[in-house]
Image (tube, rainbow, N blue to C red; front, side, top):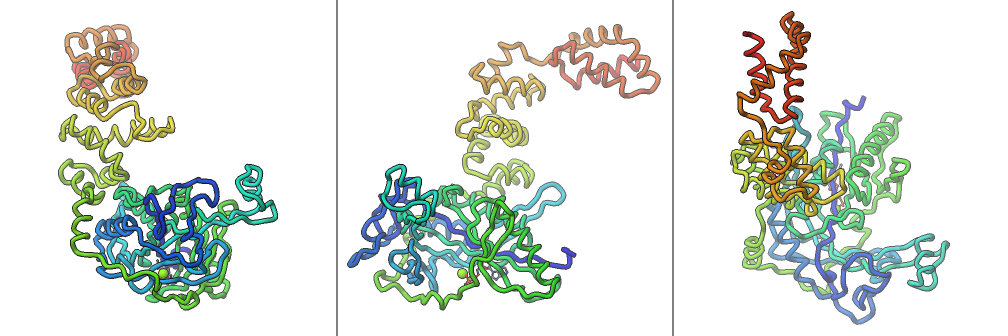
Length: 499
Ligand code: ADP
Ligand code: MG
């Protein structure tokens, strides 16, 4: 039944910009301060104050526009979006409506891997600057602040207002409705998340709300040209919730239609505990907000010169670096995508390759993506905290490449390096006597011994049991304490058994 339907998803993302102060005031944006200690007269909307635009926030938006190949508007306009809510002291939010700072652009996604991997370009509609609202702190949480003596007043049946977040700069990034599955939506969110961190405009901390997504979801019968009516799932702050919320919502909409009901446009919330979405409010239209240009702020004019300077300061972008890894280093699309998931990872990989040599790029990629990543994950460490440096790993890869050690022994060396037992791979190999035995005379002696003491396996092999051969290889490797060159062991055994 599911496959008669096509899913359509467009995503609106709020990325908190990594500025020190707010978008229209000098108050600090640092997370986690005591309530209402980082809200100045402008954020509190005291009479007579005026907003002053933060140049750094504008620069972040320009960086983003350039990174996605969009048009950075020479002239954009701030507008008042009017609504009444306790955490919005001015009674309006300063945002951009008709003339946003960034128009168009696109993001390329890599979805899945192996045979099912495909690439997809998602178009962006726009990105605009706006200020965040404050936060309501309800019941239990408000009470906690009373106990901690932070504020007086609220208790479990009260709500406190924290205006520290009011005026924090946001970039709202709006996609076209181009995604066709929850997997594509997650790939989009992850790619965008990686990009804003890569270009240094957002710390990407999803728990702290620095990067949150609203997913607009609709379904239509396959082949139908018009879109179905959408519902918007608000404030998804993890990739897992994004996927779960969309999957639930799609099924819900299909059931509604199957049972003869029409989808009403609405804003819904996802409850991670029940895994369900539920209606928050019926959708408001732009006119409900009575948008008009903010008379306190001049239109924002951006010179070509400023744009050029920002462009010069941009790092190589993940998409370009990915192409280089594929074309110059011969990596697969999947490997190149994984290694460009963050700038730290890409840099670590590049440093490893620089030392180990481009011919060993694939080996370097495997060690970074598989062994190192698994170890970091297991120990709950970030790449920056890895006891095994890029130089360590390059030394290790070189010894695998020149047959000094096998891949299996290399795991031992890696482990030793992780625990600081040696300054380099060579030192570990030397000290622990891990050098691979490639002397064919020495290997031949071991092979002869094993053949002499394993008559039964030899007989089985001669009777046609290939399994017996593997057991003989195992015996030789054991006698060599894992250090014999496996290819040589294989070859010699075959020779001797054939003779
Ligand atoms: P609004 O003005 O109400 O915010 P927009 O037209 O700006 O609505 O769209 C908001 C988001 O919803 C965009 O990301 C857009 O791609 C997406 N969207 C619009 N129509 C649909 C639809 N029928 N199904 C899914 N997503 C949609
Ligand atoms: Mg919109």
